[in-house]
Length: 203
Length: 172
Image (cartoon, rainbow over all chains, first blue to last red; front, top):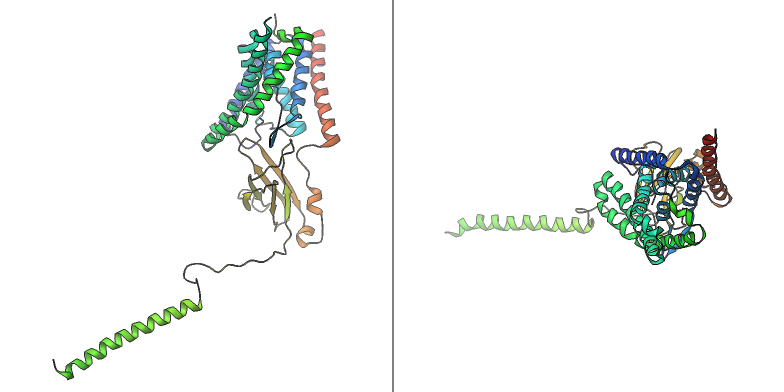
């Protein structure tokens, strides 16, 4: 899901930083300072999830947990994902520093969308509705992220428009795994730590 | 037409045919002597005595970067690729350096992943004195083993330190 240095054009990099900058600023503004430990914990899980390899038939990929990040943190997903991606770039050489803006936008935007669309349903008392919304949040956020990655590449090089489609299709299996992961995380949190799903926004 | 007038005409026709025949025969002989000379160069092959550098490219998931675009850049010309091709089934790419300095090998896939390897080539390697000079000097871009665990712990520690600093700032 990370785009490496050298792929994106200057306008795409600038657009990525604009989206990421605005998102991080808004996320920090909305975030309750009391919840900063919860944000750093979710950010740590996101940071480490990239090291968890998932074998899917002949290919292998790693988890991203974009959906659960959105459901747990809401707008604070932007600063949390930005910081985790920065550390991944510096410590693991995933992505890069110049493309950090585009990578943050690709992953944090679907996370926030998952929160805005499915957040209320996930917090509902109806367990079936909650489970279905959690799966949809995990599944669709990965596909949306793949779509954004393909879009950044297409903007930079129109010849990669076909590649964007193949990236989307290639992410369908891992999206199903991410949906299942979001489902189990949500059900576990609903039983053990229901307050975790109440978001970190200022009240 | 009298017989005396026909004689030079017949001699001329026979002369024309015989000269054309000679030309055709000469062309055929030339073609047989040098097969294919008119349409293509001759080709051949031999095992090179030059030493090659072989790199293996892989993803952090352990998968090989198979059949992907690969370019090698010489330190003598960092803009134009010295060699352009694809990795093999096992993510390998080989090139034969002819210049001392830092060579770059770039392998890209179509999903936005790129590996950029730097290979320091010494004069000892080019002259064949050093056995493993190049391969020993090249390091992987992705940390492995204990290094990976330490970096992961460092990352988590950094994230929690940010949280502690933010809380302290609020308290102050």
